[in-house]
Length: 162
Image (cartoon, rainbow, N blue to C red; front, side, top):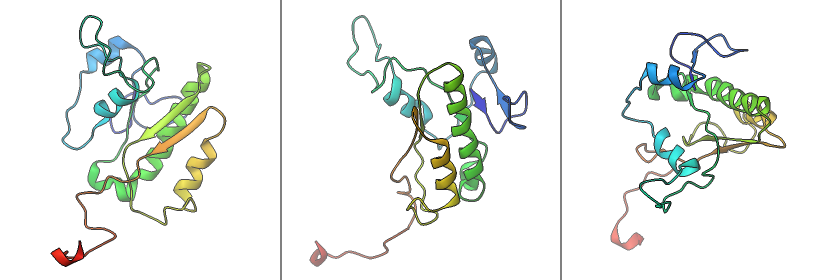
């Protein structure tokens, strides 16, 4: 676990955040509750064991035997559009570096859509992520997550439009 926004001992190669590398440190730290992210939900879909009782594996994740590496990105939700890109690049680099150190492939997932930039792979952000990817290293991003914002199309529909 790398908490980018908290002080403490940063992971090797980084100058910010706090890395928790064992279960006892994570338990001692406890947890934070926020009202806007959904990492636990996404983690369950990706790699949840499905164990909800004796012999009940109905709700397993897609890759249920996978290890998980969590990174809490640095900016708050209001700062993502201006400050979040470098934090996300650092997060992907951290995940891929860890996976390489334990000899495993990795999928870095960001379930946060973005309407910034051309969205065609030509932005510096997209190029930086692309440079981190390769055999055994994939970055996955949601197609969108801006349902609460008025972007792309602004029109009042009438019954004749449908």
